[in-house]
Length: 425
Image (cartoon, rainbow, N blue to C red; front, top):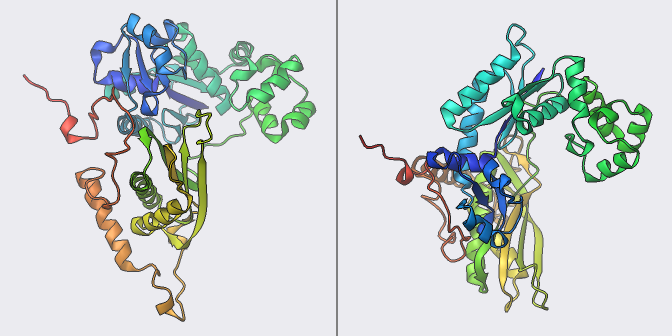
């Protein structure tokens, strides 16, 4: 048996955790630069606020219903997610963190427990320790657990917990689930299935197996088997190694000078280097891209990108920043108004598997990685971990001139000493 634990309206719930007066009030969270609505509380959904809607188009509706609006606070959301996942790791022997707000639990060893009672215990524990509401779906396969979780979230009669155990319970759930709501069935496949009068999960489960395999391939065949109760997707306790890392931002204001772009690109490159070191990986390729407003219909619209191979695989911030600045100089066009930039490191290799090849001509390869660079990066990371991210950084990194718009940013209550709540008695 698998359990899927999913946090309800996660970003909005994180904001409510430290604002209990908003518990029953409509809350929305905006995307980068306070552009579009990316999270809504149930109360916000009820008044007709759509997911992905631009904030300026909903401004009258937000004001009319006194909706609390927040800018994205990813430091808070990431830390709250870590707290939830650590708790789940204590409540089950095996956990697969599927996303920032979802995790699969292996419940196969809970044969002596009433699964519904234990799912309620999970909900209560997470709510008590973090303030985040969750729903729990339990079923014999991951795909069925996804369906169970959706039923638990969408139907109040389940009270946040849905267990699909018997054949009758499973078939009833499949009949109530449309094909477009099945995990792994995308928009194109749902159109194909509906054209063949396969409208529900129950229809797909009982469809011709050869037809499903011919049109939906091996992925579709696995989904069908999972719907029939045969587990094809095992728990993934070890996250697959990343193949690339991207850091990019849309600017809060227009950027026109090379100096400002260099500051932004240097900051993104520095963040990529930090992420590489956390992954214990080295990057061999580096990509830099810059872009003007994509909605600008004039001839000034521009997208510039270039990829270059690094002299050797590295996670050294200084080396990556230097290469990024060189690439940026080659794609920058004067007179353009830039709204976005980003850095991608790719062709990643594990640090443990990489060994430096000694050169016969060391004087011709001054960029050869050495222990001094590694020690410097370790010291830099240790200081930032102790005193806070960004305490120590390279001089070329600067967010003041191009930082994104965050007019509704909440305090980082769990990650910033200056924002920690004070309790006065």
